[in-house]
Image (cartoon, rainbow, N blue to C red):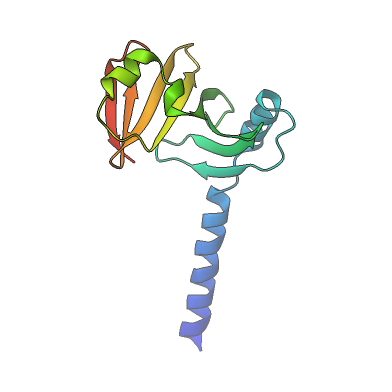
Length: 136
């Protein structure tokens, strides 16, 4: 009986920990609501680097936005059509099958473009220079 009670308590602790990691701090929620007013459905995830990522739709477009734990906006990723990538990025991707594309606006004012190719995310600047490659 003690083992069952122990396992029950242990399992409850894991569930509460998992729930706590899906609930962002109030500062993050407030910053999100200020930047994206009127968005009703938001899914939250905590990333490995400690940032909070909100996944949502705005005007029928899939988006995500990242915030630091204190509510500072870091970046917004907006899904776009492959044909909406800048011409130099499209040229750099010539011959590759692009599954998804996105425009990423960062807090420092820069914009980069992401293309998913063979389960990898490729990041480019507007001039078509590849900046980073990571597994999806």
